[in-house]
Length: 345
Ligand code: OGA
Ligand code: NI
Image (cartoon, rainbow, N blue to C red; front, side, top):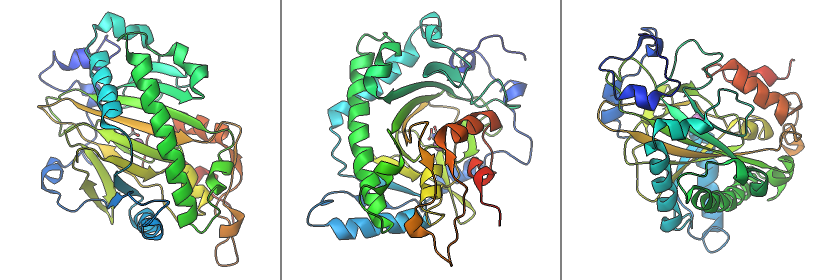
């Protein structure tokens, strides 16, 4: 069935089969049994006492999680519940607006700094993904907030407050990650230039045949670190020792992952790990990642302190602009974008 509607949300509720453009080749389909049976998960780190009584233990826990999983969940992160619930509610309201209202924000151009879109990159991909998403640049806030949706009426205020809080948390985590690598606390802060921050609101409608498609196929994130909020519907899976671990939703936690730029800065001590999102037939799933990133002009390279005879530099120097452009053109795949910037020996 050919689709003429640009967005998935409105189409999804009218079909009882997955349209053919969403169907993955047979060797590349999700295993739904795993989604429900997975017991092991990624580490949970309590941030209470970071910068205080429990500082060095927390730094060790972060080092361990980053080396072995590339992912961890955080509790006692200091983000007020009210800020989170306003963010979640206004996101639900946004995706509940009439299609004509939502479509005012539609664009398939990945260079636009505010846009509603679908799948991943409809201009370059062969198979579509079961997702709509609103993507926003959020730092510096004053540069972007006027482009954000003005409907629902509290959207700008609620999302601005959430993104300010996420920036504070990102800076705290980047200090801790620097320290966990044996670098000065402000090393990564300085390496990211003027800094950037993007956010997505991912909306995965119920899917009639979730065994045939993905919400998002396996990929690594292109930014520095990602802080993800998910609703109570499982779907996120992380590759660990060749197996897909499901990250079951835990109230009041965020999921943090190392993304490609920290892999480069750490000279491969920390890995940007593949992850993906599955969909299900009953419930809508929503996730809200904050992608903390370098500014486009930042020059990214392995930290000199982490380069020596036994650990030669694994990457060439590049600007984040070059990297980010490649990421969107290539599309999501298991051969991660970071491999294109590997040093030749
Ligand atoms: C992403 C992502 C996972 C999820 O948006 O990059 O990995 O659970 N999302 O939605
Ligand atoms: Ni991701």
